[in-house]
Image (cartoon, rainbow, N blue to C red):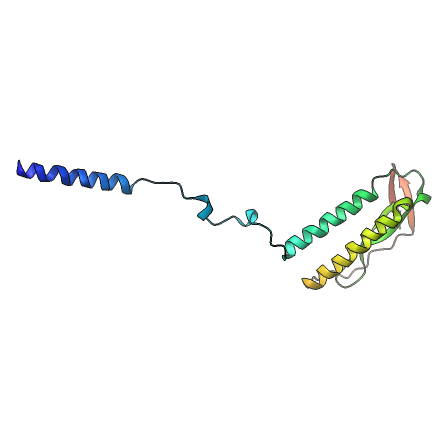
Length: 146
């Protein structure tokens, strides 16, 4: 009997320790390492600066393509983007009536791209983009003539 009185509390204690130690709880997500894709973008990073340039270019291209092309004489073009070793990345067509605003945005974009190239020591292919000779309308879109 004395033996049973000792064995029961010892067994109960062992069982409770085992039950508590095997309890698994989900880790707190705040303490886990973050996936790199979910991390906030460092505003001083090359990836962030490149994304800002992309947004600028898309905005300029959208502004330039708002109008339908029906008369090529009402359209012009300008170089857009600056390669690391000089020269434009490409050329963009836009209506002459929006020329002042679009050229201003292109100049800002080109300046920022040049700064980006210097800041991150970007290397480019140094091939010069062919300069267009004019613009023509094709399916209501302005197309460069080479």
